[in-house]
Length: 362
Image (cartoon, rainbow, N blue to C red; front, side, top):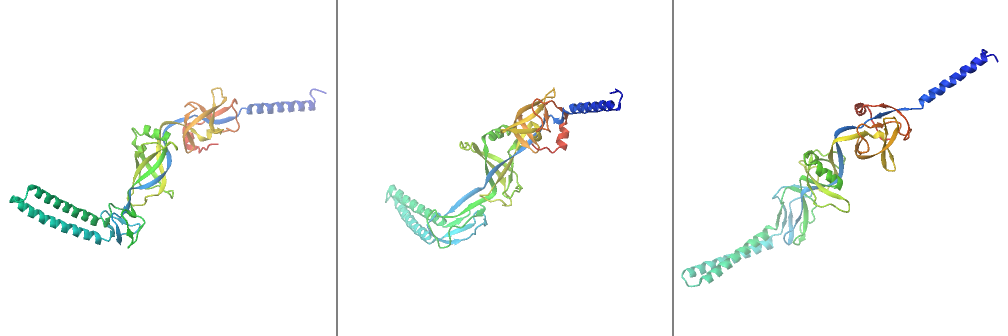
């Protein structure tokens, strides 16, 4: 075959074209992906805790004397004020006892005056006078006791509060100590919630200089946020060893009486992190409950790095350990690459990453 024949020329052209395609495929074997570096920022993380809501005063109202319940002056759910009458126990017996005690005191008073007149004339001894005085004092004390028993037949509100269920009705025969109702002062609320030991230690460490850590919000049962801000005021003395928790108490004002004793909700507490190290959630992947990222070293080789997550915010993780500030972290193609692969990367500035990308963990 002639070297210049058309067939020979066509074969050479086809061979050159095939070599060019092979070269293109070889150049495309090194993929190019986006990467970024961690960044630092002062942030606050919201922590949520299930809570129980209590009025600052919640007491049982009980009968202090035996007798028939004569009058009920309040109704269930009613707001009462300090000193307002609530119940009346039939006072007839106690009134009679008072009148009897007063009569006895009058007799003792007359005897004392007679004895004193005789003592002044040295007809009777000073001991006789002292005995008469002691009898008078005893009689006066009996009057005070009878007055006290009589006063216990009128049961008044000890403070402003909301009346709960009425547990007795007019005409009921009451024993001493019979429960009549409960009364709740809800002008302020004590909200109790349990905090794990590690978060308690964080709170005590961070709250030395920053009192904002003690300010909390309350999410009500309907999901709405209560319009008053609370403050953590006390922490229980001992840990619950079975659960590893300790109880906190926050106080909330309740000026409109919206919340009541016994409700539940969720405490929202902000936990500040100073100079926290953040990476995109999209850069992470999980293997056997452990979190990893791909780091591109200076030679462009992929390294798999285990990390420890301290907390998370939308689209980002706070890293406790595992990466450094200048590490190049892969943020795409995580399912396509493997440790040891050579990659070309496009480094995305953290400012652009924060403002433009809505990143989710793969």
